[in-house]
Image (cartoon, rainbow, N blue to C red; front, top):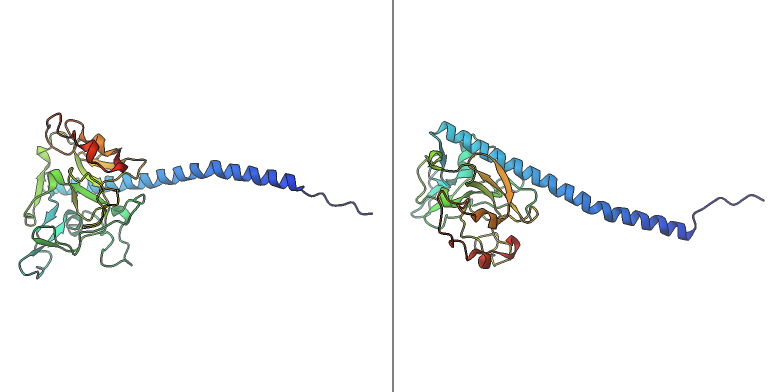
Length: 266
């Protein structure tokens, strides 16, 4: 009589499956955390590249950065009846050769440089291309991006004509003051008062998410005028002197923020 071949019993198989399930349960959060950390590192690198390129522009233009939007002869006039075209700071720096061209809002098949997008963003990156700035000029040639200017310092209207505009010499605390930030809004600039829970696109219903970044462990990435990048929560940006401004404010200036900001920022 031939002896039977050894085999696992049902109990032994269940034990092995249980051990594998436990190991998977332990490894998945670790792998997810590693993936999120890698994506966050890419975003930090993107913001550093943007900052260094913008500072290189300033070095070549009397220590000045371009404004949030720029009127320029490099693009044709848009026949809107009375309005001219403008470039965002993003498109302007691409046009001047300081940054690689990014994803084209009108060409989904053209990914462009990934330096313009945060891989951790929970929604698609957006662009102001094809939109009016809300006042009197029409945006052309913008890139799809998750990065915007600090609109408290960079916002100008009407857009200046083909000129550098933000004087770095006047920034009192370059290592403290924000120049670039993450966003899921369409605009190339974002001001500190956009702290409620509106949606990512112009005219969208409130989706509770807000415009600023929260997707890096509850924090966002912020670049300062000295070229450094850090992660911090939105409420951390308003310590006195606030990182949004080039000046101190009254002690109670931001007291309404805890009641106004979207829940994802808390």
